[in-house]
Image (cartoon, rainbow, N blue to C red; front, side, top):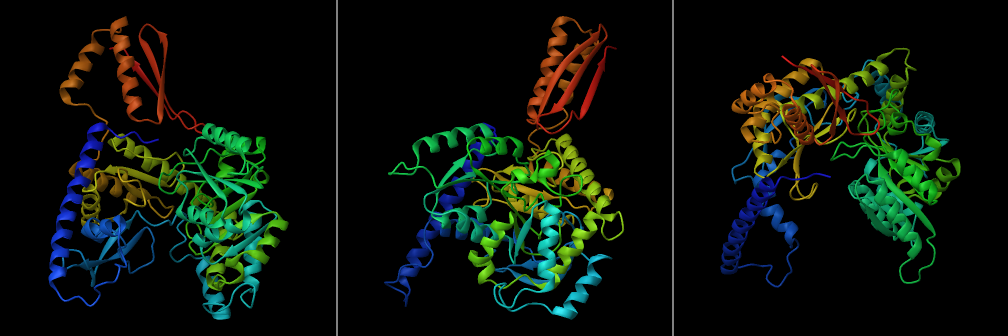
Length: 548
Protein backbone atom coordinates (compact mmCIF):
# COMPACT_ATOMS: atom_id res chain seq x y z
CA UNK A 1 0.00 0.00 0.00
CA UNK A 2 1.28 3.47 -0.94
CA UNK A 3 1.15 6.05 1.84
CA UNK A 4 1.04 9.58 0.45
CA UNK A 5 2.48 12.38 2.61
CA UNK A 6 -0.24 14.82 3.65
CA UNK A 7 1.43 17.83 2.04
CA UNK A 8 1.88 15.94 -1.22
CA UNK A 9 -1.75 14.80 -1.20
CA UNK A 10 -3.00 18.33 -0.48
CA UNK A 11 -0.92 19.93 -3.23
CA UNK A 12 -2.00 17.21 -5.68
CA UNK A 13 -5.67 17.75 -4.88
CA UNK A 14 -5.14 21.51 -5.21
CA UNK A 15 -3.53 21.07 -8.64
CA UNK A 16 -6.41 18.95 -9.91
CA UNK A 17 -8.91 21.39 -8.41
CA UNK A 18 -7.26 24.30 -10.20
CA UNK A 19 -7.25 22.44 -13.52
CA UNK A 20 -10.89 21.45 -13.02
CA UNK A 21 -11.95 25.02 -12.25
CA UNK A 22 -10.22 26.49 -15.30
CA UNK A 23 -11.60 23.67 -17.44
CA UNK A 24 -15.16 24.39 -16.32
CA UNK A 25 -14.64 28.09 -17.03
CA UNK A 26 -13.40 27.34 -20.54
CA UNK A 27 -16.34 24.99 -21.15
CA UNK A 28 -18.76 27.73 -20.09
CA UNK A 29 -17.41 30.16 -22.69
CA UNK A 30 -17.18 27.40 -25.29
CA UNK A 31 -20.86 26.50 -24.86
CA UNK A 32 -21.77 30.18 -25.03
CA UNK A 33 -19.91 30.63 -28.32
CA UNK A 34 -21.36 27.41 -29.78
CA UNK A 35 -24.88 28.56 -28.90
CA UNK A 36 -24.36 31.77 -30.84
CA UNK A 37 -23.19 29.85 -33.90
CA UNK A 38 -25.44 28.06 -36.37
CA UNK A 39 -25.07 24.40 -35.40
CA UNK A 40 -26.37 21.65 -37.67
CA UNK A 41 -26.31 19.16 -34.81
CA UNK A 42 -28.78 20.98 -32.57
CA UNK A 43 -31.04 18.47 -30.89
CA UNK A 44 -28.45 15.67 -31.04
CA UNK A 45 -26.98 14.29 -27.86
CA UNK A 46 -23.19 14.75 -27.66
CA UNK A 47 -21.29 11.65 -28.72
CA UNK A 48 -18.73 12.24 -25.98
CA UNK A 49 -19.90 13.42 -22.59
CA UNK A 50 -19.25 12.99 -18.91
CA UNK A 51 -16.19 13.42 -16.73
CA UNK A 52 -14.07 11.23 -19.02
CA UNK A 53 -14.66 13.59 -21.93
CA UNK A 54 -13.94 16.61 -19.71
CA UNK A 55 -10.72 14.99 -18.46
CA UNK A 56 -9.51 14.31 -22.00
CA UNK A 57 -10.28 17.79 -23.31
CA UNK A 58 -9.19 19.90 -20.37
CA UNK A 59 -6.44 17.88 -18.70
CA UNK A 60 -5.04 15.17 -20.96
CA UNK A 61 -4.69 17.34 -24.07
CA UNK A 62 -2.43 19.71 -22.14
CA UNK A 63 0.18 16.97 -21.82
CA UNK A 64 -0.62 14.56 -24.64
CA UNK A 65 2.82 15.12 -26.17
CA UNK A 66 4.17 13.01 -23.28
CA UNK A 67 2.22 9.96 -24.42
CA UNK A 68 2.26 7.84 -27.55
CA UNK A 69 5.49 9.23 -28.94
CA UNK A 70 6.15 7.61 -32.36
CA UNK A 71 9.45 5.84 -32.96
CA UNK A 72 11.26 5.13 -36.23
CA UNK A 73 13.55 2.23 -35.28
CA UNK A 74 13.37 -1.10 -33.42
CA UNK A 75 12.67 -0.68 -29.68
CA UNK A 76 16.17 -1.73 -28.64
CA UNK A 77 18.24 -0.28 -25.78
CA UNK A 78 18.51 2.90 -27.87
CA UNK A 79 15.92 3.96 -30.44
CA UNK A 80 14.89 6.90 -32.62
CA UNK A 81 12.01 9.05 -31.35
CA UNK A 82 10.17 11.18 -33.89
CA UNK A 83 9.63 14.74 -32.76
CA UNK A 84 6.14 16.27 -32.93
CA UNK A 85 4.96 19.87 -33.01
CA UNK A 86 1.65 21.54 -32.25
CA UNK A 87 0.25 24.84 -33.47
CA UNK A 88 -2.99 24.67 -31.48
CA UNK A 89 -1.84 24.32 -27.89
CA UNK A 90 -1.46 20.53 -27.99
CA UNK A 91 -4.94 19.77 -29.36
CA UNK A 92 -3.30 18.12 -32.35
CA UNK A 93 0.27 16.95 -32.84
CA UNK A 94 2.02 16.68 -36.20
CA UNK A 95 5.01 14.46 -36.82
CA UNK A 96 8.19 15.97 -38.18
CA UNK A 97 11.12 14.30 -39.92
CA UNK A 98 13.45 15.19 -37.05
CA UNK A 99 14.46 12.32 -34.78
CA UNK A 100 16.21 12.08 -31.44
CA UNK A 101 18.37 9.11 -30.54
CA UNK A 102 17.18 8.20 -27.04
CA UNK A 103 17.93 5.66 -24.35
CA UNK A 104 14.87 3.41 -24.19
CA UNK A 105 13.47 3.01 -20.66
CA UNK A 106 9.88 2.43 -21.73
CA UNK A 107 9.62 -0.71 -23.87
CA UNK A 108 8.96 -4.19 -22.47
CA UNK A 109 12.08 -5.47 -24.21
CA UNK A 110 13.13 -7.47 -21.18
CA UNK A 111 15.53 -9.92 -22.83
CA UNK A 112 16.58 -7.74 -25.76
CA UNK A 113 14.82 -9.75 -28.50
CA UNK A 114 13.05 -6.68 -29.92
CA UNK A 115 15.93 -5.90 -32.28
CA UNK A 116 17.79 -8.06 -34.79
CA UNK A 117 19.18 -11.24 -33.26
CA UNK A 118 21.85 -13.49 -34.74
CA UNK A 119 19.79 -16.64 -34.11
CA UNK A 120 16.16 -15.46 -34.32
CA UNK A 121 16.19 -13.01 -37.24
CA UNK A 122 17.40 -15.36 -40.04
CA UNK A 123 14.73 -17.90 -39.07
CA UNK A 124 12.02 -15.24 -38.99
CA UNK A 125 13.01 -14.09 -42.49
CA UNK A 126 12.94 -17.70 -43.68
CA UNK A 127 9.43 -18.20 -42.26
CA UNK A 128 8.29 -14.98 -43.94
CA UNK A 129 9.46 -16.30 -47.30
CA UNK A 130 7.73 -19.64 -46.67
CA UNK A 131 4.42 -18.59 -45.06
CA UNK A 132 4.32 -14.84 -45.81
CA UNK A 133 2.96 -12.29 -43.32
CA UNK A 134 -0.50 -13.62 -42.44
CA UNK A 135 -2.58 -16.78 -42.56
CA UNK A 136 -5.68 -14.70 -43.43
CA UNK A 137 -7.80 -17.15 -41.47
CA UNK A 138 -8.73 -18.22 -37.96
CA UNK A 139 -7.19 -21.23 -36.26
CA UNK A 140 -10.44 -23.16 -36.61
CA UNK A 141 -10.43 -22.70 -40.39
CA UNK A 142 -7.21 -22.55 -42.41
CA UNK A 143 -5.05 -20.56 -40.02
CA UNK A 144 -3.08 -23.36 -38.39
CA UNK A 145 0.40 -23.98 -39.80
CA UNK A 146 3.15 -26.31 -38.67
CA UNK A 147 4.67 -23.33 -36.84
CA UNK A 148 1.55 -22.86 -34.70
CA UNK A 149 1.59 -26.49 -33.58
CA UNK A 150 5.32 -26.31 -32.87
CA UNK A 151 4.85 -23.08 -30.92
CA UNK A 152 2.11 -24.53 -28.70
CA UNK A 153 4.27 -27.55 -27.91
CA UNK A 154 7.29 -25.34 -27.15
CA UNK A 155 5.26 -23.06 -24.86
CA UNK A 156 3.75 -25.99 -22.94
CA UNK A 157 7.20 -27.49 -22.35
CA UNK A 158 8.69 -24.13 -21.37
CA UNK A 159 6.06 -23.24 -18.74
CA UNK A 160 5.74 -26.80 -17.44
CA UNK A 161 2.18 -27.63 -18.47
CA UNK A 162 0.78 -30.55 -20.54
CA UNK A 163 -0.70 -28.35 -23.28
CA UNK A 164 -1.05 -24.75 -24.46
CA UNK A 165 -3.17 -22.62 -26.78
CA UNK A 166 -1.79 -19.48 -28.47
CA UNK A 167 -3.73 -16.43 -29.61
CA UNK A 168 -2.85 -13.46 -31.80
CA UNK A 169 -3.13 -10.82 -29.06
CA UNK A 170 -2.18 -10.79 -25.40
CA UNK A 171 -5.08 -8.56 -24.31
CA UNK A 172 -7.59 -10.87 -25.99
CA UNK A 173 -6.14 -13.88 -24.22
CA UNK A 174 -7.58 -12.64 -20.93
CA UNK A 175 -10.66 -10.82 -22.16
CA UNK A 176 -11.85 -13.66 -24.43
CA UNK A 177 -10.87 -16.73 -22.40
CA UNK A 178 -12.10 -15.74 -18.93
CA UNK A 179 -15.77 -15.66 -20.08
CA UNK A 180 -15.30 -19.20 -21.45
CA UNK A 181 -13.81 -20.53 -18.22
CA UNK A 182 -16.47 -19.20 -15.86
CA UNK A 183 -19.98 -17.78 -16.17
CA UNK A 184 -23.20 -17.09 -14.32
CA UNK A 185 -23.27 -18.75 -10.95
CA UNK A 186 -19.50 -18.60 -10.67
CA UNK A 187 -17.32 -16.37 -8.49
CA UNK A 188 -14.23 -14.50 -9.65
CA UNK A 189 -12.00 -13.10 -6.91
CA UNK A 190 -9.58 -10.66 -8.51
CA UNK A 191 -6.62 -8.71 -7.18
CA UNK A 192 -7.52 -5.02 -6.93
CA UNK A 193 -4.64 -4.05 -9.26
CA UNK A 194 -5.16 -6.64 -11.98
CA UNK A 195 -4.75 -5.57 -15.61
CA UNK A 196 -7.64 -4.06 -17.57
CA UNK A 197 -7.83 -7.15 -19.80
CA UNK A 198 -8.64 -9.24 -16.72
CA UNK A 199 -11.19 -6.69 -15.53
CA UNK A 200 -13.01 -6.67 -18.88
CA UNK A 201 -12.83 -10.45 -19.21
CA UNK A 202 -14.31 -10.89 -15.75
CA UNK A 203 -17.10 -8.41 -16.46
CA UNK A 204 -17.93 -10.15 -19.72
CA UNK A 205 -18.18 -13.55 -18.06
CA UNK A 206 -21.41 -12.83 -16.18
CA UNK A 207 -19.87 -14.24 -13.00
CA UNK A 208 -20.03 -12.47 -9.66
CA UNK A 209 -16.86 -10.45 -9.11
CA UNK A 210 -15.24 -9.70 -5.78
CA UNK A 211 -11.95 -7.82 -5.31
CA UNK A 212 -9.35 -8.46 -2.63
CA UNK A 213 -6.72 -6.01 -1.40
CA UNK A 214 -3.66 -5.96 -3.60
CA UNK A 215 -1.29 -8.85 -2.90
CA UNK A 216 -2.81 -9.49 0.54
CA UNK A 217 -3.40 -13.22 1.12
CA UNK A 218 -5.06 -12.66 4.50
CA UNK A 219 -7.78 -10.51 2.94
CA UNK A 220 -8.19 -13.06 0.15
CA UNK A 221 -8.83 -15.80 2.71
CA UNK A 222 -11.34 -13.68 4.63
CA UNK A 223 -13.15 -12.86 1.39
CA UNK A 224 -13.23 -16.50 0.28
CA UNK A 225 -14.60 -17.61 3.64
CA UNK A 226 -17.27 -14.91 3.58
CA UNK A 227 -18.37 -15.61 0.00
CA UNK A 228 -18.51 -19.37 0.50
CA UNK A 229 -20.66 -18.87 3.60
CA UNK A 230 -23.09 -16.49 1.83
CA UNK A 231 -23.24 -18.30 -1.51
CA UNK A 232 -24.76 -16.83 -4.65
CA UNK A 233 -26.65 -13.51 -4.46
CA UNK A 234 -30.36 -13.82 -3.59
CA UNK A 235 -30.52 -17.64 -3.79
CA UNK A 236 -27.55 -18.35 -1.47
CA UNK A 237 -26.86 -21.53 -3.39
CA UNK A 238 -23.26 -22.80 -3.45
CA UNK A 239 -21.04 -21.30 -6.10
CA UNK A 240 -20.71 -23.38 -9.26
CA UNK A 241 -17.04 -22.49 -9.51
CA UNK A 242 -14.60 -20.16 -7.75
CA UNK A 243 -11.57 -18.70 -9.54
CA UNK A 244 -8.86 -16.51 -8.03
CA UNK A 245 -7.09 -14.32 -10.62
CA UNK A 246 -3.64 -12.83 -9.94
CA UNK A 247 -0.61 -11.59 -11.89
CA UNK A 248 3.00 -12.75 -11.65
CA UNK A 249 4.39 -9.20 -11.80
CA UNK A 250 1.93 -6.32 -11.54
CA UNK A 251 2.67 -4.05 -14.47
CA UNK A 252 1.98 -0.71 -12.77
CA UNK A 253 3.64 -1.57 -9.45
CA UNK A 254 6.50 -3.90 -10.35
CA UNK A 255 5.54 -6.08 -7.38
CA UNK A 256 5.80 -9.87 -7.45
CA UNK A 257 2.76 -11.93 -6.51
CA UNK A 258 2.74 -13.75 -3.18
CA UNK A 259 1.94 -16.93 -5.03
CA UNK A 260 2.81 -19.63 -2.44
CA UNK A 261 0.41 -18.18 0.15
CA UNK A 262 -2.33 -17.63 -2.43
CA UNK A 263 -2.07 -21.20 -3.72
CA UNK A 264 -2.21 -22.56 -0.17
CA UNK A 265 -5.41 -20.60 0.50
CA UNK A 266 -6.99 -21.66 -2.81
CA UNK A 267 -6.28 -25.32 -2.06
CA UNK A 268 -7.88 -24.93 1.35
CA UNK A 269 -11.10 -23.50 -0.10
CA UNK A 270 -11.13 -25.47 -3.39
CA UNK A 271 -10.71 -22.44 -5.65
CA UNK A 272 -8.99 -22.47 -9.04
CA UNK A 273 -5.87 -20.33 -9.56
CA UNK A 274 -5.58 -18.25 -12.75
CA UNK A 275 -2.08 -16.77 -13.08
CA UNK A 276 -1.31 -13.98 -15.57
CA UNK A 277 2.43 -14.07 -16.31
CA UNK A 278 2.47 -11.39 -19.01
CA UNK A 279 5.40 -9.55 -17.39
CA UNK A 280 7.04 -12.38 -15.45
CA UNK A 281 7.45 -15.21 -17.97
CA UNK A 282 10.91 -15.06 -19.49
CA UNK A 283 11.95 -12.13 -17.30
CA UNK A 284 12.42 -13.66 -13.84
CA UNK A 285 13.49 -17.01 -12.48
CA UNK A 286 16.84 -18.73 -12.83
CA UNK A 287 15.99 -20.07 -16.30
CA UNK A 288 13.34 -17.48 -17.18
CA UNK A 289 10.32 -19.61 -16.34
CA UNK A 290 8.58 -16.91 -14.39
CA UNK A 291 7.25 -16.38 -10.92
CA UNK A 292 6.69 -20.10 -10.24
CA UNK A 293 10.38 -20.81 -10.71
CA UNK A 294 11.44 -17.73 -8.72
CA UNK A 295 9.29 -18.62 -5.70
CA UNK A 296 9.69 -22.40 -5.91
CA UNK A 297 6.07 -23.12 -6.81
CA UNK A 298 5.13 -26.33 -8.61
CA UNK A 299 3.34 -25.39 -11.85
CA UNK A 300 0.95 -28.29 -11.22
CA UNK A 301 -0.49 -26.20 -8.36
CA UNK A 302 -1.47 -23.42 -10.78
CA UNK A 303 -4.59 -24.48 -12.68
CA UNK A 304 -4.44 -21.97 -15.54
CA UNK A 305 -1.32 -20.12 -16.67
CA UNK A 306 -1.58 -17.17 -19.02
CA UNK A 307 1.20 -15.13 -20.59
CA UNK A 308 2.10 -12.90 -23.52
CA UNK A 309 4.89 -12.91 -26.09
CA UNK A 310 5.19 -9.13 -26.36
CA UNK A 311 7.59 -8.64 -23.46
CA UNK A 312 10.38 -11.17 -23.10
CA UNK A 313 10.10 -12.81 -26.52
CA UNK A 314 10.08 -9.79 -28.84
CA UNK A 315 6.92 -10.81 -30.70
CA UNK A 316 3.13 -10.57 -30.33
CA UNK A 317 0.26 -12.70 -29.06
CA UNK A 318 -0.50 -14.63 -25.91
CA UNK A 319 -1.03 -18.12 -24.57
CA UNK A 320 -3.06 -20.18 -22.13
CA UNK A 321 -1.45 -23.28 -20.62
CA UNK A 322 -3.14 -25.99 -18.59
CA UNK A 323 -4.33 -29.57 -18.72
CA UNK A 324 -4.93 -31.27 -22.06
CA UNK A 325 -8.67 -31.44 -21.31
CA UNK A 326 -8.82 -27.69 -20.64
CA UNK A 327 -6.93 -26.74 -23.80
CA UNK A 328 -9.05 -29.07 -25.94
CA UNK A 329 -12.20 -27.49 -24.47
CA UNK A 330 -10.91 -23.98 -25.26
CA UNK A 331 -10.21 -24.95 -28.87
CA UNK A 332 -13.91 -25.74 -29.29
CA UNK A 333 -15.31 -22.76 -27.38
CA UNK A 334 -12.89 -19.79 -27.25
CA UNK A 335 -13.79 -16.92 -29.65
CA UNK A 336 -10.12 -15.91 -29.93
CA UNK A 337 -9.42 -19.36 -31.41
CA UNK A 338 -12.60 -19.80 -33.45
CA UNK A 339 -13.03 -16.37 -35.04
CA UNK A 340 -9.85 -14.26 -34.75
CA UNK A 341 -7.05 -14.46 -37.30
CA UNK A 342 -4.24 -16.67 -36.06
CA UNK A 343 -0.89 -15.29 -34.98
CA UNK A 344 1.38 -14.30 -37.87
CA UNK A 345 3.77 -17.15 -38.87
CA UNK A 346 6.90 -14.93 -38.67
CA UNK A 347 5.78 -13.82 -35.19
CA UNK A 348 5.32 -17.47 -34.20
CA UNK A 349 8.81 -18.30 -35.48
CA UNK A 350 10.27 -15.41 -33.47
CA UNK A 351 8.78 -16.87 -30.27
CA UNK A 352 10.01 -20.39 -31.04
CA UNK A 353 13.52 -19.10 -31.72
CA UNK A 354 13.54 -16.91 -28.59
CA UNK A 355 12.51 -19.87 -26.42
CA UNK A 356 15.36 -21.91 -27.91
CA UNK A 357 17.83 -19.15 -27.07
CA UNK A 358 16.51 -18.85 -23.51
CA UNK A 359 16.68 -22.61 -22.91
CA UNK A 360 20.06 -22.99 -24.62
CA UNK A 361 18.70 -25.16 -27.45
CA UNK A 362 20.44 -22.85 -29.91
CA UNK A 363 23.73 -24.30 -28.73
CA UNK A 364 24.93 -21.17 -26.93
CA UNK A 365 24.84 -19.70 -23.44
CA UNK A 366 23.33 -16.39 -24.58
CA UNK A 367 20.01 -17.14 -22.92
CA UNK A 368 21.59 -17.60 -19.50
CA UNK A 369 23.64 -14.45 -20.05
CA UNK A 370 20.53 -12.45 -20.91
CA UNK A 371 18.73 -13.67 -17.79
CA UNK A 372 21.71 -12.82 -15.60
CA UNK A 373 22.03 -9.41 -17.25
CA UNK A 374 18.41 -8.35 -16.73
CA UNK A 375 18.52 -9.51 -13.11
CA UNK A 376 21.74 -7.59 -12.42
CA UNK A 377 20.54 -4.51 -14.31
CA UNK A 378 17.20 -4.46 -12.49
CA UNK A 379 18.62 -4.86 -8.99
CA UNK A 380 21.43 -2.36 -9.60
CA UNK A 381 19.08 0.27 -11.04
CA UNK A 382 16.54 -0.13 -8.25
CA UNK A 383 19.15 0.13 -5.49
CA UNK A 384 20.66 3.27 -7.03
CA UNK A 385 17.25 4.95 -7.35
CA UNK A 386 16.52 4.24 -3.69
CA UNK A 387 19.89 5.67 -2.67
CA UNK A 388 19.05 8.87 -4.55
CA UNK A 389 15.86 9.30 -2.51
CA UNK A 390 13.17 8.42 -5.05
CA UNK A 391 10.03 6.58 -3.99
CA UNK A 392 10.34 3.39 -6.07
CA UNK A 393 7.70 0.68 -6.08
CA UNK A 394 8.25 -3.01 -6.74
CA UNK A 395 10.44 -5.87 -5.61
CA UNK A 396 13.95 -7.11 -6.27
CA UNK A 397 14.44 -8.98 -9.58
CA UNK A 398 11.45 -7.17 -11.11
CA UNK A 399 12.42 -5.26 -14.29
CA UNK A 400 9.55 -2.79 -13.73
CA UNK A 401 10.34 0.23 -11.54
CA UNK A 402 7.61 2.85 -11.03
CA UNK A 403 8.91 6.15 -9.63
CA UNK A 404 6.16 8.09 -7.88
CA UNK A 405 5.40 11.65 -9.05
CA UNK A 406 1.94 12.29 -7.51
CA UNK A 407 1.40 15.86 -8.75
CA UNK A 408 -0.07 16.06 -12.29
CA UNK A 409 2.17 19.00 -13.24
CA UNK A 410 5.20 16.78 -12.68
CA UNK A 411 4.15 14.37 -15.44
CA UNK A 412 4.96 16.68 -18.38
CA UNK A 413 7.89 18.28 -16.57
CA UNK A 414 9.64 14.97 -15.93
CA UNK A 415 8.87 13.53 -19.37
CA UNK A 416 9.94 16.58 -21.38
CA UNK A 417 13.13 17.18 -19.40
CA UNK A 418 14.18 13.55 -19.79
CA UNK A 419 13.51 13.70 -23.53
CA UNK A 420 15.67 16.83 -23.80
CA UNK A 421 18.49 14.75 -22.33
CA UNK A 422 17.86 11.85 -24.75
CA UNK A 423 16.17 9.52 -22.29
CA UNK A 424 12.71 8.22 -23.23
CA UNK A 425 10.42 7.25 -20.35
CA UNK A 426 6.79 6.16 -20.04
CA UNK A 427 4.45 8.32 -17.97
CA UNK A 428 1.42 6.87 -16.18
CA UNK A 429 -1.50 8.96 -14.99
CA UNK A 430 -5.24 8.73 -14.49
CA UNK A 431 -7.14 6.60 -15.54
CA UNK A 432 -4.31 4.04 -15.91
CA UNK A 433 -3.42 4.78 -12.28
CA UNK A 434 -5.47 6.29 -9.42
CA UNK A 435 -5.90 10.07 -9.54
CA UNK A 436 -3.29 10.80 -6.86
CA UNK A 437 -0.75 8.17 -7.88
CA UNK A 438 0.86 9.50 -11.07
CA UNK A 439 4.21 7.91 -11.81
CA UNK A 440 6.85 7.21 -14.40
CA UNK A 441 7.39 3.55 -15.17
CA UNK A 442 10.95 2.45 -15.91
CA UNK A 443 11.42 -0.85 -17.77
CA UNK A 444 14.87 -2.40 -17.73
CA UNK A 445 16.27 -4.61 -20.50
CA UNK A 446 19.06 -7.14 -20.79
CA UNK A 447 20.17 -5.08 -23.80
CA UNK A 448 21.12 -2.18 -21.51
CA UNK A 449 24.81 -1.91 -20.69
CA UNK A 450 26.19 -0.61 -17.41
CA UNK A 451 27.08 2.64 -19.24
CA UNK A 452 23.42 2.95 -20.26
CA UNK A 453 22.36 2.43 -16.65
CA UNK A 454 24.76 5.09 -15.38
CA UNK A 455 23.60 7.63 -17.98
CA UNK A 456 19.94 6.95 -17.17
CA UNK A 457 20.57 7.35 -13.44
CA UNK A 458 22.42 10.63 -13.96
CA UNK A 459 19.59 12.05 -16.07
CA UNK A 460 16.84 10.83 -13.75
CA UNK A 461 18.68 12.22 -10.72
CA UNK A 462 19.15 15.62 -12.39
CA UNK A 463 15.53 15.82 -13.55
CA UNK A 464 14.33 14.49 -10.20
CA UNK A 465 16.04 17.41 -8.45
CA UNK A 466 14.52 19.87 -10.92
CA UNK A 467 10.99 18.49 -10.61
CA UNK A 468 11.18 17.78 -6.89
CA UNK A 469 10.33 14.08 -6.71
CA UNK A 470 13.08 12.92 -4.36
CA UNK A 471 10.62 12.47 -1.52
CA UNK A 472 13.11 10.56 0.64
CA UNK A 473 16.48 12.28 0.18
CA UNK A 474 19.27 9.93 1.17
CA UNK A 475 21.55 12.57 2.68
CA UNK A 476 20.41 14.71 5.63
CA UNK A 477 21.11 18.43 5.65
CA UNK A 478 24.59 19.61 6.70
CA UNK A 479 23.60 21.03 10.12
CA UNK A 480 21.93 17.74 10.99
CA UNK A 481 24.99 15.80 9.81
CA UNK A 482 27.24 17.85 12.10
CA UNK A 483 24.89 17.34 15.04
CA UNK A 484 24.82 13.59 14.44
CA UNK A 485 28.63 13.45 14.17
CA UNK A 486 29.08 15.22 17.51
CA UNK A 487 26.66 12.90 19.25
CA UNK A 488 28.38 9.81 17.88
CA UNK A 489 31.87 11.12 18.75
CA UNK A 490 30.82 11.75 22.36
CA UNK A 491 30.58 8.00 22.92
CA UNK A 492 28.00 5.27 22.79
CA UNK A 493 26.32 5.82 26.13
CA UNK A 494 22.76 4.59 26.61
CA UNK A 495 21.25 7.89 25.53
CA UNK A 496 23.36 8.18 22.37
CA UNK A 497 22.92 4.51 21.55
CA UNK A 498 19.14 4.92 21.64
CA UNK A 499 19.48 8.08 19.58
CA UNK A 500 21.48 6.20 16.94
CA UNK A 501 18.98 3.35 16.91
CA UNK A 502 16.10 5.78 16.42
CA UNK A 503 18.04 7.54 13.68
CA UNK A 504 18.65 4.34 11.71
CA UNK A 505 15.10 3.13 12.35
CA UNK A 506 13.65 6.32 10.93
CA UNK A 507 15.89 5.97 7.88
CA UNK A 508 14.80 2.40 7.25
CA UNK A 509 11.15 3.38 7.78
CA UNK A 510 11.45 5.97 5.04
CA UNK A 511 12.50 3.23 2.63
CA UNK A 512 9.28 1.35 3.47
CA UNK A 513 10.51 -2.00 2.18
CA UNK A 514 13.25 -2.32 4.80
CA UNK A 515 13.44 -3.26 8.45
CA UNK A 516 16.41 -2.92 10.77
CA UNK A 517 17.59 -4.82 13.81
CA UNK A 518 20.46 -4.12 16.19
CA UNK A 519 23.05 -6.34 17.81
CA UNK A 520 25.75 -5.24 20.26
CA UNK A 521 28.91 -7.34 19.87
CA UNK A 522 31.06 -5.51 22.40
CA UNK A 523 31.51 -2.11 23.99
CA UNK A 524 32.86 -0.47 20.85
CA UNK A 525 30.67 -1.95 18.10
CA UNK A 526 27.00 -1.80 17.21
CA UNK A 527 25.90 -3.84 14.20
CA UNK A 528 22.86 -2.64 12.29
CA UNK A 529 21.33 -5.14 9.88
CA UNK A 530 19.11 -3.58 7.22
CA UNK A 531 16.97 -6.29 5.65
CA UNK A 532 14.51 -6.11 2.79
CA UNK A 533 10.96 -7.06 3.71
CA UNK A 534 9.75 -9.24 0.78
CA UNK A 535 9.60 -12.79 2.09
CA UNK A 536 11.62 -14.37 -0.71
CA UNK A 537 14.67 -12.08 -0.57
CA UNK A 538 17.77 -12.25 1.58
CA UNK A 539 19.34 -9.47 3.68
CA UNK A 540 21.07 -7.19 1.26
CA UNK A 541 23.39 -5.22 3.50
CA UNK A 542 25.12 -5.22 6.87
CA UNK A 543 26.41 -1.95 8.25
CA UNK A 544 28.97 -1.85 11.04
CA UNK A 545 29.39 1.37 13.00
CA UNK A 546 32.53 1.62 15.13
CA UNK A 547 33.10 4.05 17.99
CA UNK A 548 35.78 6.65 17.13
